[in-house]
Image 1 (cartoon, rainbow, N blue to C red):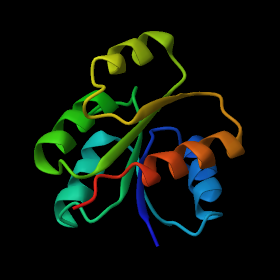
Image 2: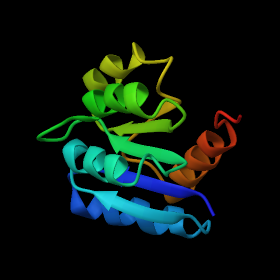
Image 3: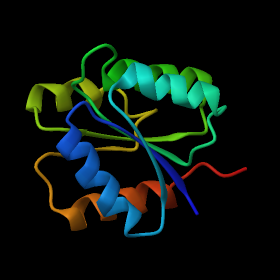
Image 4: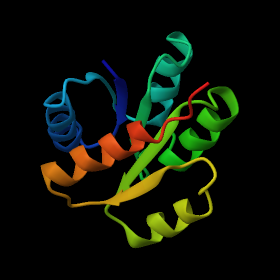
Length: 125
């Protein structure tokens, strides 16, 4: 069962995405911002298959989180989401470490497909 860490500062979005992804049988852990997500990753030694993070968050945004993950947990696949075009542009320079950026608002089917595709692309041994 793939483990997915979801980081989003909007509780309603975090819960929606968690419920949608759980429909596919994934083990879900959530964080309210990038700093909390990084704490969880560090505590659990990166034992996740996918990080799904919003880009624009307080404390530590998704870009900073993705950079930290690339440094500390290079095998972890990162999928980002944002409702802001300028934030999507910021992520475009991270192609080497970010699998994709999903634009909000999205349908439940869209996020489930994006997660399935990202998980299928995982870096294997």
